[in-house]
Every structure is written in C-alpha cells, then in structure tokens.
Image (cartoon, rainbow, N blue to C red):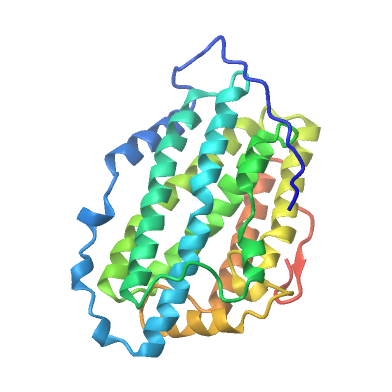
Length: 303
C-alpha cells in the first residue's frame, strides 16, 4: 500500500514562552498528574468472578472490550503527533504541550486495562473477525495531526472537542450500565481521564475562537463535517452506523454485554448519544459564532 507523503511544519521554537497562558488547561495538566493511576495497583482484578456470567455473556464482553482497546490504541500514536505539532508551530501555548504528555499516559493505561479485562472475559481478541473493520479503525490520525496543510485549530476542535466529547458521553453510558465491579472501576477511571480530554479540546477552542479568521472558522466547520461523514458515519465509535459493514455481530455483543452489566450500551442507546451530542455541539458552536450545516445519516435521519 502506498501512502501520499505529508508536509511537515518547519519548527520555529524561539522565542520560547513557557508561561501559563491558558490557566484552565494548565490545571488539567496538574489534575492529570495528581490522578495518575496504575492498572496493576488501582484495579482489583482478582475479584472478577467469571462464573457469574454465561459463556455467551463472556464472549460478548470480550468482543466489546477488545474493540474498545483497538479504538483507544489510536491515541498511542495520535497524541505524540499532536504534541509534536504544537511544539513545532510558532507561538503555540505551552499549556497544551504539557497536558498532552499526561493525556498519552492516560490513553496507555486505558488500553492496558481494556485488554486485561477482555482477558478476564475469556481472552483478548487481537483483530476484528470481519477484516473490513480494520480499514475503519486504522484512521492514521497521527498523519493528519502532523500535516502542515491541516489547520491545527480545526484538528483540535474536531478531534479533541467534538470527538473526545462524544467518547466521554459514550463512556459515561458504559459506566452507568456497569454493575460488575471490575468493569465499573476501570470505566470510572476512564471517565475521569476522558473528562479532562474533552475539557482540553473545548478550552482550547474557546481560547482560539475569538482569534480565528473567516477562513479558519470555515476550516473548523469543514473538519467536523468531514469527521462526521468519514468517521462517525463509518461505524468507528458506533458500529451500527456503518452502511457498508454488517454490524449485527457487534450489535448483539453490545446488547448481551449491556444486559449482563459488563459496561456496554446497546446500539440504539449509542445512536441516541451520538445524536444528542451533535445537538449539543451545534449549540455550543453557535455560541462561538460557528455554524454547522444540517447533518444526516440513513439510520438516524437528519439533525
């Protein structure tokens, strides 16, 4: 497979200002350091009782949690690329750079925890049974984060505010539906981290919105629309939204795991969350003078 080369920005480091310019984001960095956790020490893995669940429930759970690990792994490459982009561009604030170092650690411990929980349920699955899902999940976000022709402000608005905000809402639903203690403990930690991740995106968008030109504002809107059509509608976060891949296996696993209290949500509930979140995004964008065009999906209708 050939890949088109990307244009990297030229590093412009000096003058180097390391002062606090976005206090809310600096606080997120401090909070992340304070709340750092280790899966080995923070989660009581040995309390999991596999015999309390049927084979069907365990199989459903291991698919749900394995897929969760696949998605979370995206951040392992994306966050360092985004950090590098912030470090290379002239006059970018220090606070996001500091915060992103913490975010990457939080992503790593969540990947480990998802994989470990899948193992408890019968064994981590290292790839999708349907190979076409690999193309959906292999998004190469790091390339977009590093691409000098992609607006950094638009990237942060799209992926750190809108997308991370959706992930937070989904994980809140998973946590609310988790009755098994180990799943609940992992998801509780995950929600703490994802709350910071989404706050980072929105805080930075609020800071930059007033400084954007008309073309920069258009880039933000275009970035969100592109994400919706090529990521959200492709079934990345919500498998049932795929219009090209049969997601009945994933939907069945979600339903069974949700009913068993293993920290999942049904396909219909995930669809409701996405729809509600985009309505919230539209309203918050309007407050910043950003107008999203009408959006639609075959399974959700227009919104």
